[in-house]
Image (cartoon, rainbow, N blue to C red; front, side, top):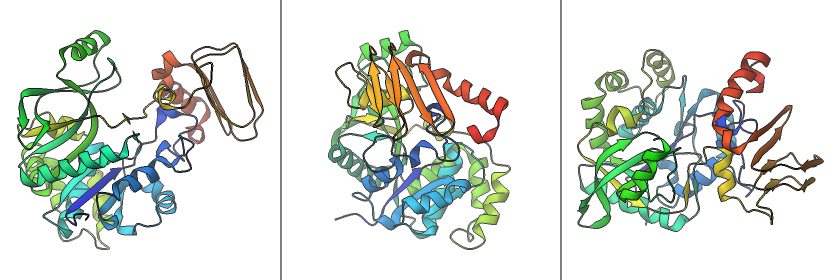
Length: 364
């Protein structure tokens, strides 16, 4: 039976610039069927959490610009479950906003916060991890994050070091956290992997409403004070006007930096459920089915010759011939075409910025 005190906040406000040109400001990657499985990433994420929380307890935090597309793709949720941010202010303000809306309805809530655009290949294991995590934070005064057992010295992820000698007696996969490290250089990432007590930071959080409120009051009192002014206005017609006003002055800060790296009661659930943050074309390449030459090809009229280890994504019915490429990204969407080495994909953000300057906002 699904616990009525379990809530979920799905963060869906990003524009996915590193997946340009398929992902753009009009239709970001969370609203795209980027895996070719018949569901968009946000639909898959929402459906995943309906196994854990009542549908009416799942909230989507997104930009005002994506209100209509969110409604269209998730018709089962009410308008009140779509939390609209007037400006992008990183993860701490959006979590504070969601907290006050949920607390108004259920101060005893246990909450899981997750991005809308991650890939989970082993969903049964994921469901079990989240349920056990929510149970643990309901019973203990903890802030919890999920760490993924690393399979490589990936420099695109943050890392969590845990205390091997301090695991939770009821679940030996839950540990005290020692340190957080942002995306490291390769040599440091290799040393993390060799040490055996580091995990990839999945950016998925769990906590009781009581503990996360206490953490905001302690570590981000200025952010909490802004949202506290709205008590009595949340879930009413006065909420949007109030939110518009405070977001103009609220600072941009992540919950990782603002709270998790400072709090002393942080625990990590070490797990492995086939996770990818799907942050780049390269990460999509890793999880997609490949042909005999290790190419990942999307498009029904694409011909590939003498090419290896490429990811090629073309519109339906577009006739495309690719010859003589190795380790390339080739993607077309509307009037935009990207041809880029996989090894240089971290530069895509810079390319997008230059396209915006030279050709205008409609292309980003």
